Image (cartoon, rainbow, N blue to C red; front, top):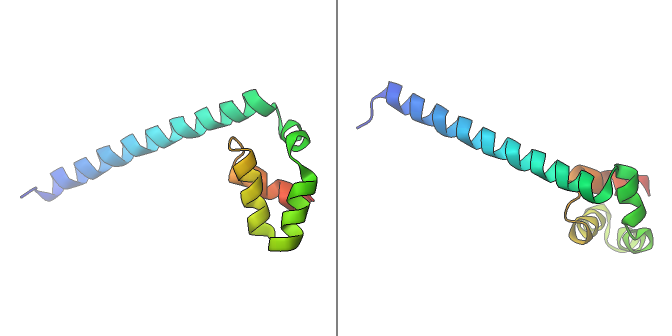
Length: 87
């Protein structure tokens, strides 16, 4: 049996390690987006707006965001949602 203090220390250590790893993944993803598209405006120029509009009209906003994410995996959910909202 683990005493409470050891349990708290283990949970804190695991939580810190996960936070560090997720921060690294997020920074790496942002860097990949920046390297590929430059800015949000660069991203917008590469998205097929007609395809996204057609999906938006036929199946709705969530499906349109999914199409953007499927075609541009480096784009974050926030970028894809912003793009669809601005159509």
